[in-house]
Image 1 (cartoon, rainbow, N blue to C red):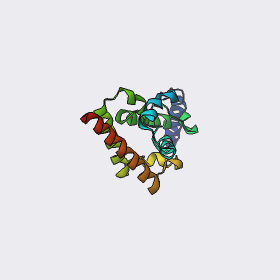
Image 2: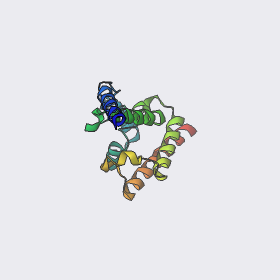
Image 3: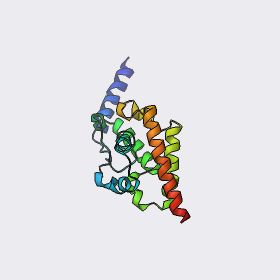
Image 4: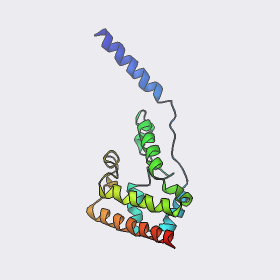
Length: 156
């Protein structure tokens, strides 16, 4: 029993110590999304879906929940955000070629259609990010149209 008590104290001390390790925050400017939003012109409904279900992990602008200040949860969230931005970062849309934009839009709607996005681990704590059938249809229709526009630009 003494060993369990020692392990408990060590775990408590470790938990307290990691609270002082700073995490990287993804606190970019909301204006970093302007180029993407202006170029793709989503409807107000699609824009709301993007804001609620996509931008936290796929842009330089993350709205953090209250529990982000608790380690090790903050490290887990930061890792998800970094990984999401590696795959698609809407804040960097202006740096993409038309070909890359076309490809990213295709991947985007396919991930949603295949129900890979948004992640379940995200929607558990962000209920407004859960996509209804209507939301899925709206976002996929919009993304396919944007993909076609980029494809057309390349053919000219």
